[in-house]
Amino acid sequence: MDLTVVAYIVYLAISVSLTVWVARTLSNNGRVFLADVLHGNEKLADAVNHLLVVGFYLVNLGFVALYLQDDTTITDARGIFEALSKKLGVVLLVLGVMHLGNVYALNKFRRRGIMEREQTPPVPPQGWAAPTPGV
Image 1 (cartoon, one colour):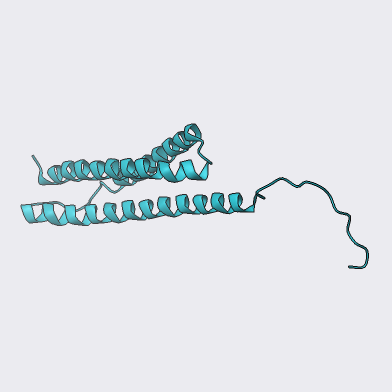
Image 2 (cartoon, rainbow, N blue to C red):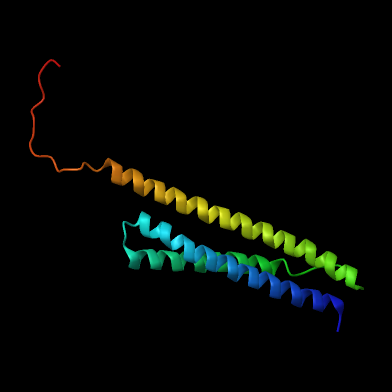
């Protein structure tokens, strides 16, 4: 078997495993943020969480597939490690950026929800006062 094919197989196995692990981590921990943002609506939080995970998979697995191709020929074990370190390093950086992007977005949604709750008066208005002329 060609060593380039071996490198491809190892690259795909590690990249897909890392993508699944990061997606599950985001899904499990991001659900708490979504439930808070959506005022405790668990069903909606689960639906949004699932949609975010699907999008995460599509973007990252698409990148892994596009980045699979390599024009160099691998001739020895050293070449396998060099090719894998380059490819997996880039995949890890992309996963990290996607992870930070998701955390940033979830935190932004959470902060917006907290600010909306703080703007709601604690009691409903009980009357109406006419404006005073000249003031």
